[in-house]
Length: 193
Image 1 (spheres, rainbow, N blue to C red):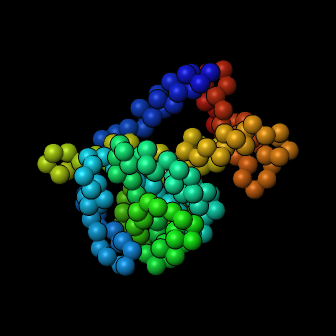
Image 2: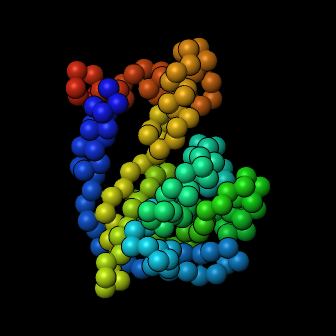
């Protein structure tokens, strides 16, 4: 079952990959320091960038809490950072209080999150991840992306919740999968929500 799920996941991720040229956006680091997207790569050629909705989103906070545990493994392979619309001072205070060890940057007053598809023009925000690659000439490409949501594969909490009895899962962090099963593959096909 695990192998089948991994194969299924690879098929979905392959469909989501589209090499997309990306400009070297300016973001805001802690202390209101202006930084370029290219600087987030450090010595790596790949960058995993989390699009977080900010301090006001309890789900985004839960995902970010989980990144601390896997951060050394991720950074062994690629650069890793989180971007949110919160001002740097708000990010710093919140991240310090939660013990987050990853780099954070603000997209406030920049077109970055909108251009990447994680903030709509009407202000609605969507959490997710973009993976960028920098080529030998310094050009940046987004090579894959995905959205986060209750029950996804990016937060191990959901898998533990799935092991609990249905009554226990009906709390504030229950996923759509728990409630109606419509996000689960049935007969080898995905059904709509």
